[in-house]
Image (cartoon, rainbow, N blue to C red; front, side):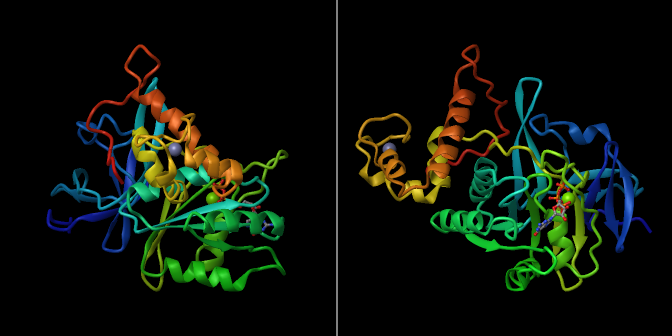
Length: 328
Ligand SMILES: Nc1nc2c(ncn2[C@@H]2O[C@H](COP(=O)(O)OP(=O)(O)OP(=O)(O)O)[C@@H](O)[C@H]2O)c(=O)[nH]1
Ligand SMILES: [Mg+2]
Ligand SMILES: [Zn+2]
């Protein structure tokens, strides 16, 4: 029997022209019709894994996408205009998976995901992977992010060097949450899931000759966990830029910067090149980690560019797409 309108179903997977939804515990393929795209021009795709949708009475088409409780999204540049790309919908936890080596740790990407989660008021945890390859780097990044108030789990799944305690912590976090894993290709996202989720058999891949991942995971996969909860393993991203973020909003996404700003001479200080800026001084002294400050400034430059009026290099997205929350 096709589901009635009263029963929303979960989107498990999205392909180019169809998506798979869960009906009575089974995957059920539904085409993506054009009307789904209406009114959502600021989004790269009208649907994301984790969305709840209502099927029409035939069960063969999506009638409506239910409002999201949360989303992890980033800016996707297309045709010179910014659009929002939703990586996962209705999640309750973000795991940023970043290897300390092979591929090297990329602070700006990690900081982008953490900032996007903070913006959505979504809890986020940093999972440092491949700590067997460079324990000193692992200790360094652990300290940097502890200073930002982020919970950090240093892990390794390498044979003989498995970090059982932190992997058990990852498993405990997944329990009961709907968790999205996000990070560079080759960081070890799928490997991590395979180590902490009983029965998960996700495909994992080797790195290429210059130590980059090969985009082994090509589609976001939503797995239902045996003990409750879901995990979304996503394809690797190369960058993570915030969608439609205001210049004044950014500092609220960096708690350790914010903690310094009372000492700035100007009330509207953006902690960039202003005089008598306590944040710049703290970054120079190392109280604010240089990598975090560099990420903030790179994000600020992008936000300024997007806010510039058309014709002056601005590429502001159409109204209605962003979620500006100044003062937070
Ligand atoms: N040394 C070491 N290698 C690891 C560890 N975790 C994963 N790897 C290796 O890293 C490579 C990439 O792992 P994947 O799990 O496929 O990475 P991914 O993040 O899912 O990559 P994409 O699907 O491309 O986004 C594989 O060769 C893994 O064996 C670890 O803790 N230590
Ligand atoms: Mg993968
Ligand atoms: Zn300042």
